[in-house]
Length: 333
View 1 (cartoon, rainbow, N blue to C red):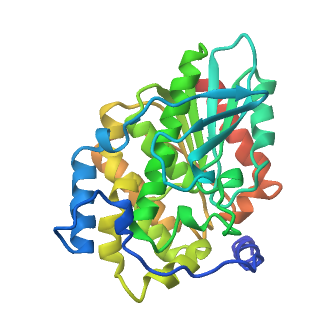
View 2: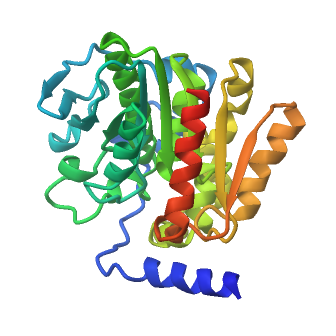
């Protein structure tokens, strides 16, 4: 009965928005290095191979950010610009507590509202933990004027989707650098849905992240897009032009599964939260990630919510989720 109710609510939430659109399929050669010697798919393949071979360089901060604080806002130009002016001005809301050395970077879900996760940040503050709520690429004030949703973050443009997640990981690392300069010694990251994916990639490449919580977890970026209820419009743009197996290969540099070995090499405590009736991060995809953890002998901490992807944000599941997240950081950060 609970499963039927949750799945009904998931469909209602997913079909509530009427401004979703199917964007055209593109390789996105303009997002790739300037090399016209190969056809577009081959260029993308070579780019992906190099990104996987040297992910430290792929996710490195290429330029020193120009941090600016005005009131409770931290802004800086993205170290990995997209060429789209609003998107390249990074926005972060600060919830700082004086006298402490603990801070959590909060990474919202795809198409999150501008004030989402403020309540969680204030809960952290209640326990004397600072928080930084970071806007993802193409979200909030970073969204281009011609778009109603944050479609450019995940779209049928293969290379732009790679760039958006790469940009986000680099920006997380930049915020970690800023927090270190402010005297914070214990820094955590908490991400939900695509924010969870970004947070996982950041944990794998940023040694100054000490603790993490991933709210909804899965294996391959492409598989989530292909099978998820919330990304069905993205799949519609992809499916006539590319198979899942090929798409999975192109999006390996932004897939958590690609970096499980790195997480093991420099292990830090992290909590993996799943939703039992998730219609976007399907449970079988989540279980594949846990199977890889077990195969490699990596310790992991898991919590299961008796709800779905959208319904995680509804009472009472949102309260239980917030309790799990807050308790974990207070205990381990």
